[in-house]
Length: 216
Image 1 (cartoon, one colour):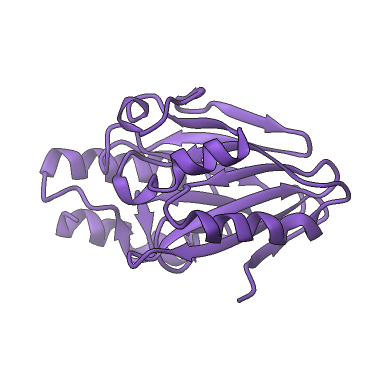
Image 2 (image 1 turned 60 degrees about the horizontal axis):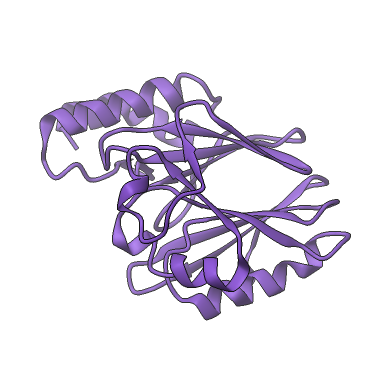
């Protein structure tokens, strides 16, 4: 299986799906420095280690996993996190309000607008409240093309994340997604969700009012 989903002069992005829940694990690698960010160590440590090994071809120097970011606290997104931290020694990051629920301490607490800089790229945290209190998306702005949003379980093709039929949580999530993603980034922005296939903001934008009206 080809794991490479994006390649530019600056970075590569690789993705694998793990577990019977089709969890996406994303790996960003800086071309020149080999600095790496992994998003959601969801499950299957051997598969993640194989992904890391495959990324050795993506940089001019041997890559190094510097940070493991978790988009939110739910168990299916963190099952391989303790073992991956132990195996790699990488630092960890999560949204401030979800971090206490993770199985390992978070070295970096992310709030709305926080930027994590690596040698060769940076990502910006977007706090999207509703699916969980501390859910975050991570946004990479490619200097050569569209932005890439790693949205966790807050935004999918066809709607926002599950808010368990809680009207106030849904209202918070649809508002955050609208104001902090759709109002900020253009239509060609690629959305990489926590499960399933990618989409673009342009493909989903016409349906925002429909989602709000249906309440999920």
